[in-house]
Length: 95
Length: 191
Image 1 (cartoon, rainbow over the protein chains, first blue to last red):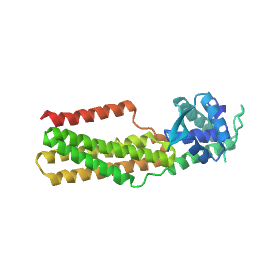
Image 2 (image 1 turned 30 degrees about the vertical axis):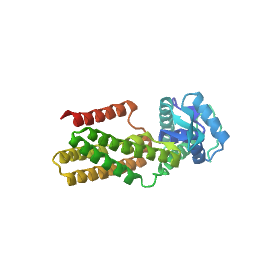
Image 3 (image 1 turned 180 degrees about the horizontal axis):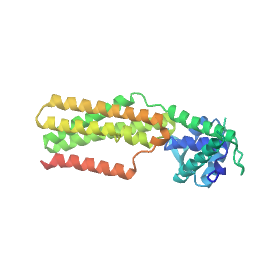
Image 4 (image 1 turned 135 degrees about the horizontal axis):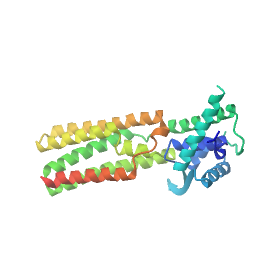
């Protein structure tokens, strides 16, 4: 599996990246609630994905309060596409 | 609950891969499928568009200085309503969808832009021949078509959110906006 990406192996990271393909950017709390994870768990996933340039986070305000927005980078979009293709190929091999 | 923090250098089994993909696709679909539009969204966008078409037609046909003010006021109404609805959408959902902003709110979806162009042209023509009832008809048709075009795009987005979430580029949007403003100014002061 040449394009299999170990950074995207945890299901939460794959789900997070997939969620971010459906929007331009999402609030940290929105993603946290959808994934049903804690702040610290999501922070660790976001940090890991940001470290390899797959996800961008930036501070902003929303309804008068400080918040963090998350978005997918073009590198992240490309990595996700390759990773998903590799997973589909793996599944197809045994069918 | 997807709290697995583990990473491994070994590739997943086919079962693990299938489960991870299913969960990820489900999460993406759930986010897009759960997005809500602000109350009275389409009616406000359609009404603002109708007002913009009507005021622009009246302003252009007047060929007077006040006409420029009327036309600009209509554009400002549409931009204000659009801006407020975008802010309400973000506040309601905690997300930003550029495709929604450009194609639904600012009308770059195919149906919306086509109907808008035809209605705008018809309203301007009607204003020049002083058929004000026809200006109103074209303005309403333009507003309704704009809103219906937005609804169509929203349904397309819901079916394939990943393929439609990205909107037009900022450069293209700026070029279209400049062209629209230049065209309107040319009509206002050119004849």
